[in-house]
Length: 248
Image 1 (cartoon, one colour):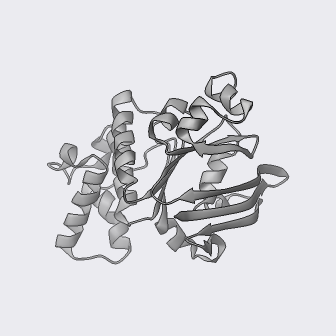
Image 2 (tube, rainbow, N blue to C red):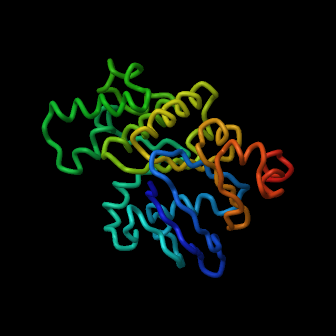
């Protein structure tokens, strides 16, 4: 089932065109890996999905982007960002306890029942592969966690408000291989309930976790296909050159 339908998407920041005539669908319960060199438009594409680009000066957008068949411009932006959560490259825990970091969004949406709150916090910490590491210190500051644990805490905080889609912008860029593996394991499990769009500069990561992969270059979508095909028999020589490390 299509969750995002994108047609003839163009994005400008002032006179600079960041995305050019991008058309594609994003399927529910898939991991879509988005790859490409710097300044290829992949992060602009990701931030478009929950309208974070709207916060940038001189932003303009043309074309059509629909979430669940409804134009995202017609969805209240706060609701859209609840439906389409985002995990950034650098973990950004709140200056609160581990428990309160996860509970923050739930409380913001009106939940007050202590028992249900505790159950929800535990549930999403488990989904983020963090519960066993923190269950005995939920009242401790989130800043006492390692970088990888903080990133998984941010994933749990995103899950807590029950999004449909999770956007990951280089979530493992500063992490060691063990932390990276835990986040990748979490993503693969999470796609059973959520749609995931992953922007990554690590082509091996894209190959490991992506069901499909989109390759961007110079603001254009060059190729989108099943990940196995993209990495073994791409249709465009530029895709092959990038994967093989000939540029980027």
